[in-house]
Length: 294
Image (cartoon, rainbow, N blue to C red; front, side, top):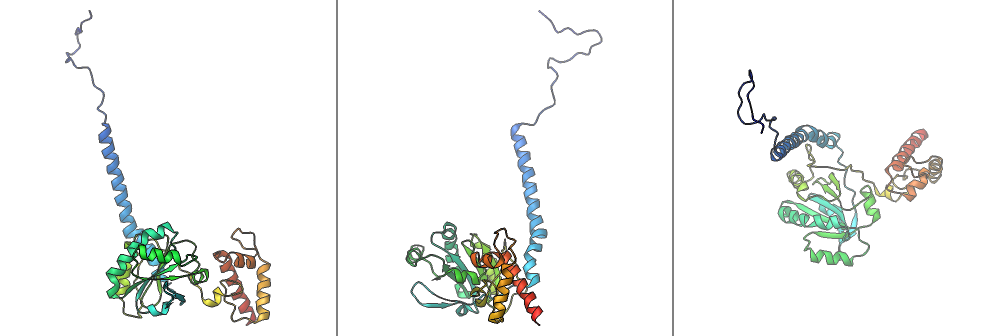
């Protein structure tokens, strides 16, 4: 049997064999990883709160791009006339939605709570249903105990507000009748609460100079009735003579839209009224045409 002899000149050692450097246990690794993730998340939060968010939030405020909300007249579920102008002086949350829209159904209870909370301060919610018929809207209204006015909308009304590409799409309108925020897609109702407070603090008819959105906000592009009802949708031709309109439309047929649709500009405007590319090009061409006539 072999023995653990100590050779001459070799220092005595204990009975334990040499050990490899201690490795970190699996649990300890997990704790370190979680801690690092936490540090990164906190860093990103403060970077967004104090650096990125203020820059993006101030973009619209700096440009003053708060367009007046286009007026309209619709019928509510009982057939009574509802005008947007009736809400002037109040803060209005204008919600385009539909009963078949799952995200819409999820966020509406939050709007009911906001209506209850701020009604006495001058806050209102107006729901514009994009359903094809009123019956499912009636049933939904009763089932979810809506406490605000709901009216029936249509595509032309949606076009006044830049075209409602998806549902829900929500606009927040101040006491001065201007649109301060637009959010396409469902969000928690609390997303609007701080903004509502800011707008309610303004005097009736007064603008909010230092307004800032509290989250993601979409660009606001409204249209006038003359643009919606135009022979070239989205372009106001009311100042042109019939001959000039014909000339202008001919110009549009000679240039293709660059949105990838393979249509000329006139066809793109009539076949896809929501195309922002053809709309902007067509408006620019009209401006050049009007200047050339001066």
